[in-house]
Image 1 (cartoon, rainbow, N blue to C red):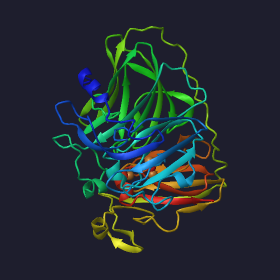
Image 2: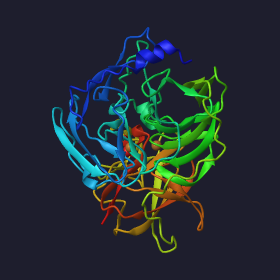
Image 3: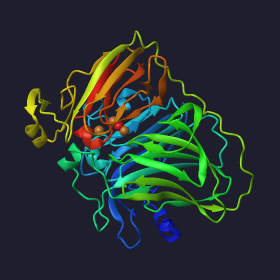
Image 4: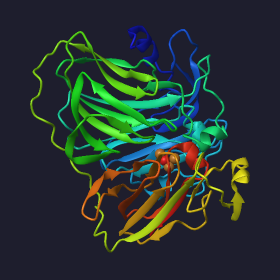
Amino acid sequence: MGAAGIASAVTARPVSAAASPATSLEARPGTARLAPAEYKPTPIWGYDGGVPGPTIRVRQGERLDRVFLNNLPQPSTIHWHGIRIDNAMDGVPELTQSAVPPGGSFDYGFTLPDAGTYWYHPHNRTWEQLARGLYGALIVEEAEGPDVDRDEVLLIDDWRLTETAEIAEDFGAMHDWSHGGRIGNWITVNGNGYWSSEARQNDRLRLRLINASNARIFSLSLKGLSGWVVALDGQPLAVPETAGQLVVAPAQRVDLIVDVTADAGTEASLVSHERGGSYAAAVYRVGQATADRRTEAPGPLPANPLTMPGPLTTARSVDLVMDGGAMGGMRSAVLNGQDTDIRTLVRQGKAWAFNGQAEMTDTPLLSARTGETIRIRMDNRTRWPHAMHLHGHHFRQVLDEERMGPLRDTLLMQSGETTEIAFVADNPGNWLLHCHMVEHSAAGMMTWLRVG
Ligand code: C2O
Ligand code: CU
């Protein structure tokens, strides 16, 4: 794959800088060349009309201000995924703001405490709006970044396209909602099914992988590139790890620093492993080296100013039991305040439950004092994996009483797995905890915490 003609045709995005001033971000219909040139451009919804939306780059500690203009035919919001944000700016309808109606606007403005790779997307009818192309990268730059020849965002998405390369409109399909979510049939990187670029042998690249798909878990590997994972979900690893097989769940990010090891005249690639085989999702055409390969491994990225969880033995602990889905044997759950049998639930678009609730409750899963260390024990009793995302905080997976995993904002849990996360609830407000397979959260896998 990676035909040069297709690649150059697709990079011309229908973004008109003149139409919207730099301080606005407009959600509106547009078109994108997701598929090869023999197809018509695909009608999409995008920020500033393109997919992905504009990559926003801000320096750590600075402020970001954007007037969100909604020119979609339905209400929307923007959620700034992974940012330890002011709660009022978190973009969650009913919990932190009202959804912005068609023709309306909302002023988002907040500071960015942590450097790293983040992204933005709607939080209203996300199963439809994300699938139609509403997302973009939000990059918060370190005061002093690593020594690389290039810093590149690779937003990976999974689309369900019809035979005429239009987005399949079966957004509410209950079969998807009760199974693995909306899995597509066309994968793009930066809105291009044949994304490619140039690099030179021995170049050192920083690659920022972002999984923007509704529900697909990507399994990726590198070919002709070799290097290290330096950050997960925006947060630096204390010690960079050799990059091998990379499993990237919906909403997760992986920052890599890689050296181009492929010979000049060949291709280096990011390989996606699917059920039907493996193929290059992103390709670098490799040119002549202009320098020797670096021999030194990159040091860790500078740590962000987060408070690490305190002693776990005294931390408050809460349980979250995850039930439901196809083959899960859930018989009933609470909906509209009433115990409701599974048939009725499904008719109302619900298929999953957290602690027996198939809907957001008026009372939070937990109320924390600001600064308190919290443990959440999550028990996945379903037959499906889930990508559990906490808003406004990063957490660590508790491996045992002594060891904790890296900071993350989204954790992939396997079917049948029980695990625990711990974090300092130091960001006041109302924060969602949900599965980021967005059909699952719409169908019941959503709860919230109150801090402060
Ligand atoms: Cu990126 Cu509540 O999500
Ligand atoms: Cu899920």
